[in-house]
Length: 249
Image (tube, rainbow, N blue to C red; front, side, top):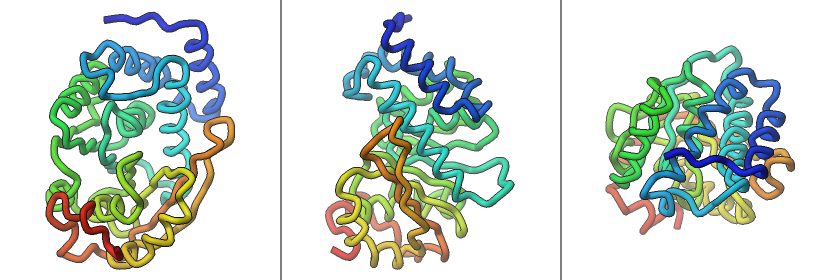
């Protein structure tokens, strides 16, 4: 189903292109990102994929995803080309499928436990020509004990859980030396204070906290952790345990 964008939405796509004008791969990806939004809106699961509608979605979903990528890349090793990347709880594709479009040379793994969303992601990746995407229809705790364990140079998770919980999901996927980039809102300081012992137990340390540009978001900051040691064999714990009993809690 093709849903024609309104004038405000078209203006938002133009502004998104201007925000990332220095990134040629992003500029080439914009038509595919717009097509992805059509797929989301045309899906029977649209209301479950995102609560953001209209022109606001271009900024909230796509610009924020690309800004997360931009900031995370600032922490990757200089000259690093192809990256194995995992996104936890990808939902409708933010940020994971957006990154796949913007970085076609990367190996992209989308971890999504809800079967309907996982099927949407796989179908959208095919429609968008994203041959670099693999969808894992499983919980993060299961992915952390599979082939992706300690295999990814970059791991993200957006709006999944509080910091100490999402670190237990993400750290087992990150390779030693890899980066975990987590966008957070107004409770970041509180979450950082609670997550200190969890990060250490999982082989991670805080590498920095960087704000998104105000043109993208005036409230979102990205907590960036670096994996400095292998994740102990006991993590992640069984599905559901990290959320019920957060580390350091």
